[in-house]
Amino acid sequence: MSTLIAVLLPAVLMPVMLWLARGLPGMPRLLEPGSWPAELWILAVGGLVATVAGVLDWSFHRRGGRRIPAAEHRAELMALVLGVPLFTLLAIASVVAEPAHLLVPIVATALAMAGLIAFDETRFHRACGRYETLLHRLLVGGNGVAFLAWVHWCFTRDAVGA
Image (cartoon, rainbow, N blue to C red; front, side, top):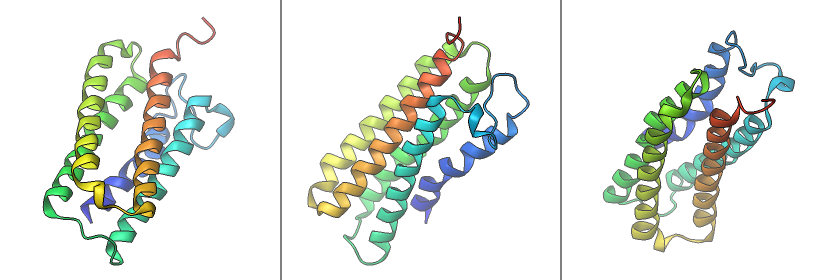
């Protein structure tokens, strides 16, 4: 269940964050898609792909798919848990006037997460079938696209129109 929560948390927190930041200047408004920059659309699509793949993967294992050993579960949770500080850093970078001081911690956290994902995929997922491998690729790829879109928006939004 903790894995499912970790998969769903960004999909719930992102709209909540946009709603809470609705009064800040330059922030897109959640219920006005016309105010969304291209990066937010890309983030939404990438995040949706990742969330659906994560839920399908969780469901696959719950319905009797490949059994996940405890060591693999710990490795996956460590990678997913790093999403909390990464999301927090990106949320802060979204609302501060000068997010540049957050770039190094954001990249360091993302690299640590990528290392854990690479370890998990190479150590434990050689036994995965095609369907499960596809879900993992969509989960990681969708989150990667969402991350890159969010980072791009955070660090280039003031350059647009300058």
